[in-house]
Length: 135
Image (cartoon, rainbow, N blue to C red; front, side, top):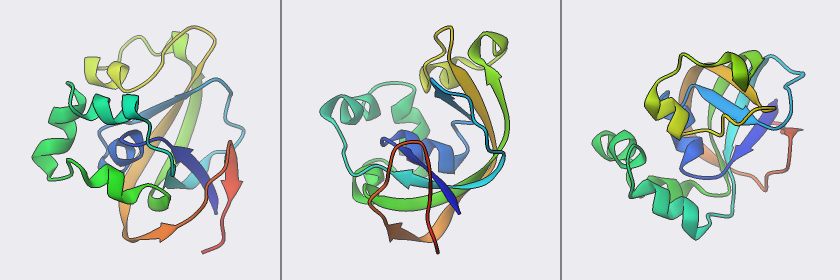
């Protein structure tokens, strides 16, 4: 299976279905199901995001506030990449979605569908780019 690593809390937001567009500096050459990996590193600036809006409201009501730190270094869910478009073509998105990504010119929006958490997180080291993992 192909896997994409995310810094927390973005990995959790994708699995919740709250973040439906992942922004990257490179275009996806792959379309289909991917596993969602929560990177082992969890920098202070990312932890601080959880305390700010719209992150706090997206995580807290679902009982997941502080869960992202526990999941670091694990594959926590799955989603499907259905499209990849330049961020300049993504003008009609919600304010929250915009806050969850980097929509600078020259970047790409990976449109995700069918997000879900795995029943049990799977420990994994992670890697840059789309990487392979055997279940």
